[in-house]
Image (cartoon, rainbow, N blue to C red):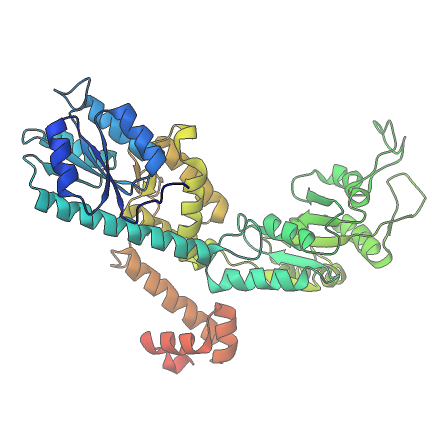
Amino acid sequence: MGQKKSDKQTLLIIEDDTGLQKQLKWSFDTYDVFVAGEREEAVALLREEQPPVVTLDLGLPPDTANASEGLAALEQILATEPDTKVIVVTGNDEHENALKSINLGAYDFYQKPIEPEILGLIIERAFKLYALEQENKKLLDKQSKTPVQGIIASSPQMLNVCETITNIAPADVSVLLLGESGTGKELLARAVHYMGTRNEGAFITINCAAIPENLLESELFGYEKGAFTGAAKQTRGKIEYADGGTLFLDEIGDLPLALQAKLLRFLQERVIERVGGRKEIPVDLRIVCATHEDLVGKIKSGEFREDLYYRISEITINIPPLRDRADDAVLLANHFLNLYRGPSQGRKAQRFSKTALSAIQGYSWPGNARELENAIKRAVVLAESVQIEINDLGLTDSIAIDDGYLDLKSARKRAEKEAIEKVLISCNGKIMQAAKILGVTRPTLYSLVERYGLKNKA
C-alpha cells in the first residue's frame, strides 16, 4: 500500500545552514516541512510537493556570500509555481536585496536573526492568503464558465446572451448578431453552428467588408469557366461550400446593394446561379450574420434593403460592449494572462497589481476583448517583474480623469447612474422594461434607482 499523504499544510524551507535547518524544522512541526540546501534540490521539491509557502535564504551555495543564487532561486520558484508565497530571509545589511526580492514577486521578507514565533506569524498569514486566493480562483472560474465555448463571462448581460444562443441554436432560424468590433461575434456565430442541427456540416465565414466589391459576388456565388478574364475553371463560391452547414456573413452592413438583392433571392428560393452560369443550384444552409453598424439607420438612408433585413434577423442578439461589464474585463484579463504567461514563454509576468486591475476595470476598451487581449499580450512581453503594472498595459495616458472624479470607483458610479437614467427616460420610467435592457433584476434596479436618487425618472 502507498504511504498516506499528511493532512498537514506543506512548507518548504530553503536554507544551507544545517543547524538552522533543524531548528526551523523543529519550530514549524505543525506543518509538513521539507528542507532544501541549494537551488536545484529546492526546485525539485517544489515541483514534487507544490508547497503553498516557501522560506528562502538568499545566501545559497555556491554563492553563499552574496544574494545572486538566492534571487535566481526566487525567480525560478515563481516561474514554476506563480501562486507560491515566498518569504525571503535576509541578513541585517541586506535591505537592498530584500526590496529587490519584493520587486521580483516575493510575498514578504524577514531579517535574521530568526525568531520562530515572529517568522511563524508571517508563515501563517501567507498560508491564509494562499488559501483565500485559491478559493477566489475557484469561484471566478465557476462564475466565468458559460454554456458557449470560448465565451468567458460572469455579467448578467453576457450570460443572457449565452442563454439565448443555447436556446435558439437548435432552431432553424436565421440569426443576426449586433455588436462592436471585438465583442466576440464570430465566437457566438460558431456556437450557433456547433450547438445546432447542422453541426456536422461546414462553418464557412466571409467578411463582407474585407473583399473588394468586384470580387465579392464571385466569392459568394462562385463562377463558371470563362465568366470573366482570369476565370480559367469552374469555381464554387462560399455559399456552395456551406451546403449542409452554416454560412457566416460578417459585417453584413457593408454588403453592396446589388449583392443584397442577389442574397435576398437566394434566401427566398434557396437556389443560386454562379457568375456566368444559367443553372440553378439548390443549397441548404443556415445563415448567421453580424455587423457593428446600425442597420435600421442604413435602411432609412437607403443603404440597406428592409426586406433583406427581415430575412436575416429572425432572431437578433445584441452583444454588450466590454465597457458595460467591467467584471468580465477582469475575468478576460486573467484568462489572457494565463494564456500568455509561464515558463514556456520565458516570461516574468505572473499577476496584476491592484492598480493594474483597477485600470482594467475602469478603462472603456473601445476595441473590446480583442484590444484587451493585445494589451495583456504586450504587457506579458514588456513587464520587467512578476507583477504587471498599469504602465505595462499602456493605459497610463488612456484613463481620463475629469470633472473632479479622481478615482475609478467614482467614475464607474457616475457612468452607472448616467446609463440607468438614460434607459429609464427611453422606457418612460417603466422599471420592468428598463431592467430587461440593463440586464438586471427588478429589485436590483429599484435599489439602484433609490441609491442614485432617480425616483423622479421611474
